Image (cartoon, rainbow, N blue to C red; front, side):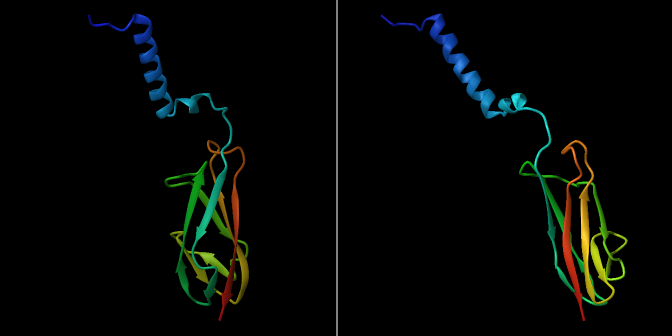
Length: 126
């Protein structure tokens, strides 16, 4: 005689399978408290430039450990007479010997409650 599983054990098995699938799909994130995530701004480029040179750089931004695609950034030099950003905002143009700070700010109210800012020291040498 073949024993068929009871309705209760079948329901229990389907409940366990469903719960495992929901957890695997990130269902637990739905119940995580809402709020700002930790944001990391990373400058990728040279920190020492030679006068009268133009050097490309890039910026990587992560929120909660996940890279942000095409983040909206505001960037400026603390002293444009030492170095400044090019028109495309993807390179630094070294103008005179000295040191200044490249300021990079993430403009996003969705990711965090404040505007995370990176201050990267840049030196210009002869």
